[in-house]
Structures are given as structure tokens and as C-alpha cells.
Amino acid sequence: MIAENLSLELRKDLTPEARQKEVRKAIVGMGALSSKMEVAVAELLCEVRDERYFETYGYTTFDEYVEKEVPFKRRKAFYLMAICDKFIRELQVPVATLENLEWVKAKELKSVVTPENWEKLVARTKTMTVPQIQDMVAKMKGEPVKAKPVMLEAKVEAPQSEPTSDKPQAVEEFKLFLFPEQRKNVQLALAMAKRETESNSAGHLLDVICSDYLASAVHDEDATTALCLRLQNHVLNIERCYKVKLQVVK
Image (cartoon, rainbow, N blue to C red; front, top):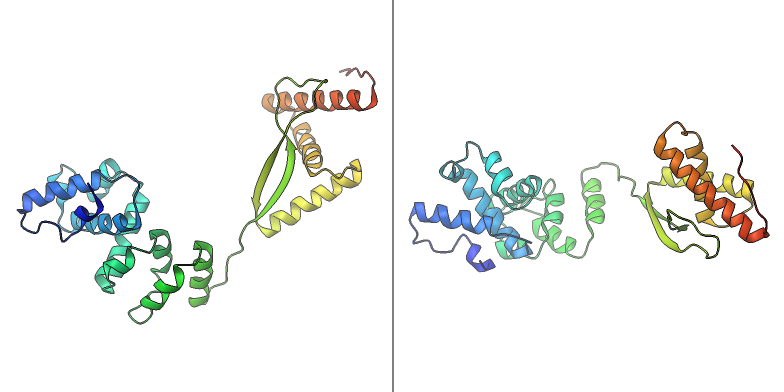
């Protein structure tokens, strides 16, 4: 069913029973939602809730209907209805205005939007990211802005179940998202590993730190297996670099 057929203005000539069926088919037929379709389905969900269509559909509660029949997660369904209740019903924001505002942004504005500021806020947030909107809302409410994760990147060795000595291992990109306090902790650990190993490779330093952690958990079968694999890799790397043959003795 195309987006315009989901509008509440569609086919007002339907009998109540026929409309219930049309609304049900429209909601069930939703897959990936465009912004326009999100607004429409939010209105239809509110109609199912307020008119208690879910009882006609054979469900005892609206929650049960959403869980079993709505084709996206419950949390999104309730966010969409809350946005509809706030923006369309309470503030009388034109539907056409909301069609160009993603629901993930609208839900962040819900707690601060008013009849006086909705137009300015909706226009302003069209070019903002969700984290930027969250910061703006926090400032408007006089709350502290939450710390945002930062990204730490390193080149690390790709895991191999059977390391070989004749070919260098491939590398792959490894990204971590950390809060500032976590990043400081990780960087301190990398600096300590750098002093001990005299290596400048972030991937090697991270490998050393993880190997040390695994060594403290050798009672765990999975950790032991992983540690032995890393030991094999280190032995092979040393043999290749120094043209020597090492023997590991238990």
C-alpha cells in the first residue's frame, strides 16, 4: 500500500467495520518506513489504541496487539504514538511539517517543544544530528551535557586458527568507541605496554595487553586456547625475524 493511502484522510466513506480492517492491513503492510509513512502509521496506531480496534482484532490489550502484529519493535511504535500525541494532537503541528522530520529527532524534542517554539525547533533540527539535538535539549532543560564516546583506531592482526611462518599475517581495521575516561585508561595501558616492549605498533601493544589478560585467566578453557594461539603466533614471528628455532617447554 502506497504512503498516501495510509493517510487518516483516506476514504472517510468507509463503515467503522471496514475502516478497522483497512487500518489493520495498512499497519501490517508496513516495512521500512519513510518519514512520510512514519507520520501516517503513528496516526493509525493512535487510532487503534484510542478506538480499541485491537479488541476487534482478537487481542486483550493494545500492548499484546503491538507485540504480535506491528511489524517493528514495540519501543518504536510507542515513540511514534507519543510523537503523534504531542506534535499533531496537542500542538497542532501540520502533518506535512513532521513528514520531513525523522522520528528519532522528534522524540528527542518531545520534552521541550511548546506552541511557541515548535516551528523554530523543527526547522533548526533538520540539519542537526541526534547527539547534537540531545545536547541542545539538555541545555534547554538546564541539565549537564552527557559525555560522548570518542573513537580509538588501531591496526590489529586478523585472527588465524592455523598461523603459518612463511607468510606475514593480514591486518584489518579495528575501531572502538570509548568515553573520555575509558580512552584515558586505554591510552595509559598502551603507553605502559610501549615502554615494556619498545614497540610503536598500536596493534602489537593491544595484543600484548590482551595476552597478559588471558594469562590471568588460564583456568578458563576458552582463554587458555586463545592464549596458546597467541603464543604460537609470537613464537613464529620471533623465528621469522631472527632466523632461529624456538621450543616451548611446559
